[in-house]
Image 1 (cartoon, helix red, strand yellow):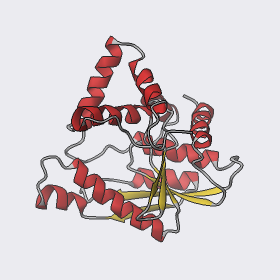
Image 2 (cartoon, rainbow, N blue to C red):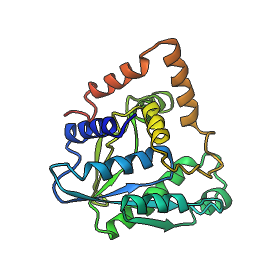
Image 3 (cartoon, rainbow, N blue to C red):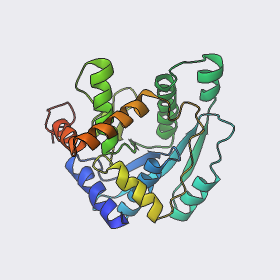
Image 4 (cartoon, rainbow, N blue to C red):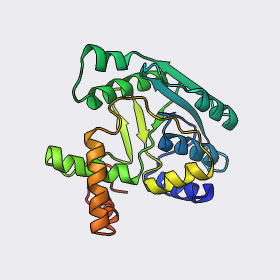
Amino acid sequence: MKLQQVLSIVRKAVDDYHMIEEGDRIAIGISGGKDSLTLLYALNALKRFYPKHFEILAVTVDLGFENLNLDKIREFCRTLGVQYTVIETDIAQIVFDQRKEQSPCSLCAKMRKGALNQAVKEAGCNKVAYAHHRDDVVETMLMSLIYEGRFHTFAPVTYLDRTKLTVIRPLMYMQEADVIGFVRKYNVPVVKSPCPADGHTKREYVKNLLRQLNLENPGVKERMFTAIKTGNMKGWVK
């Protein structure tokens, strides 16, 4: 997928849900994975011509795994001319060594978001951009149905009362397959997650389940996404 196509998809999401306003200072959470780097690339290109002026900066929460090398991400940000900040934490030690969590994702995500929000507030940001794409939206809804018994997923825009930050998800209309195609075409320097739980989570199970459902029922992911958009869930009504 070409950059122009990505920008068209991202701009539609931004416009549909009024994600960006004049003077916004937006922190992009960078994990090093394909999704967050695609979002960084796209928003950096979008700000050059978007009618509402905004600033971006990139932020990585380093969980403390010894084998994480962010040199490629630093160079990538330098190439784009984007300020890059790494927040050092001991979250991995707390979650895996001290707490020895059997299901570490929830606690890790909570601590990671807390560290990220505090850092971006200190940097003068009023918004945080997460790189959730269309597949993430549908997978989260299916996880909610299976494990919580409710029809729910995250919203395109979420205001966090406690931190006074607004979370936006500009990739929400983009399919994961297109993200993969984009990073390959533009040689985006993806860094593999060093987390030992990576690929062995409930989300990974649901991702595989959804893939199988879509193989057996072509178009089911698209229909599920349509159900989310038209289901009158909080935050999804335009």
